[in-house]
Image (cartoon, rainbow, N blue to C red; front, side):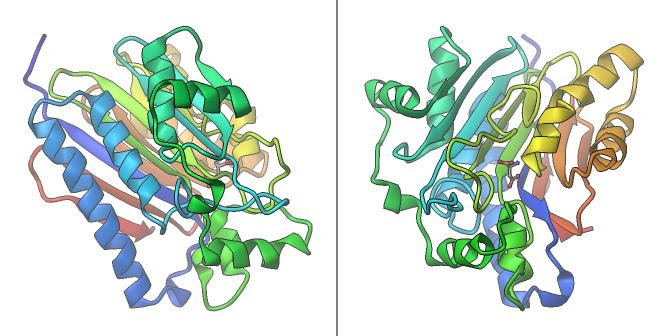
Amino acid sequence: MKNNNTPVIAIHGGAGTISAATTSATQAQAYHDALQSIVRAAQAQLLKGASALDATCLAVELLEECPLFNAGHGAVFTHEETHELDAAVMDGATLAAGAIAGVCHVRRPVRAARAVLEDGAHVLLAGAGAEAFAREHGLEMVEPFFFSTEARRQQLYRVRDTGRVVTDHEGAAMTPPLDEGKKFGTVGAVALDMHGHLAAATSTGGMTNKRVGRIGDSPLIGAGTYADDRTAAVSCTGSGEMFIRVAAAHDVCARMAYGGATLEAATHAVVHQSLPAIGGTGGLIAIDRHGNLSLAFNTEGMYRGHARGDEAPATAIFA
Ligand code: ASP
């Protein structure tokens, strides 16, 4: 096993219409601090030789526990004022993948996705079956109200009457000055480890006011999450239906594998051409096997952070 790659980690906390004009300095600082500390935690693991799979799962688990982001605690509400969480993880070394969809009792959905990957029999488990699987694997279960925050509840009330289904950030944006809501708060991580392996993980509460039973791109391998050591690791955030329709994460890898595109060209084509062509908004983070990084979005901003080797983490919100 070669051991000489400089590890790289990147995370996102969702993309969307996060307007610089209406984001207070205090709000922005809270996001920067959260992103910094989570990048740092994953970076420290990678520098100790941890696998990309472990590092991405750790980063996503920390993002799930942070109420600023729409995943785990802080997840958005469905039309029925319930939570339905989705998560996926993929190992670029083996193409092993695991995902869960529509759960409301699993405290850390990404751990359940990882357990599905380790188990190996299936790739995607949904609803009651996914919860039974998580319970059998000893994962921590909670009552659904554990995920609820007042900010997300108010977001649902604002949106529900409009009949629209919006991303986390849009929902918040509907009450000025909290443009915070006009964003997709899904979280994700991609990493390249010292051993030259790639991995991707994504977790989400989905979209505010979504229909009960709706599943977005995040837990669908190839749509919101994909990793292949031969090309890249990708985690997406945005209007899930469109990401599903263009198989966004896999399309980045396919453009590289079949067309010889660079990571930058491949992500640009997906984010700035394929998605907008069908009204898709959002972004993605991606790392290729050489450690190149792309953080691409067609919205005003995307919460993001990354670190290469032992360099200090960099975080950003706006373009
Ligand atoms: N892509 C997610 C979904 O459609 C939403 C998001 O990125 O915030 O479920």
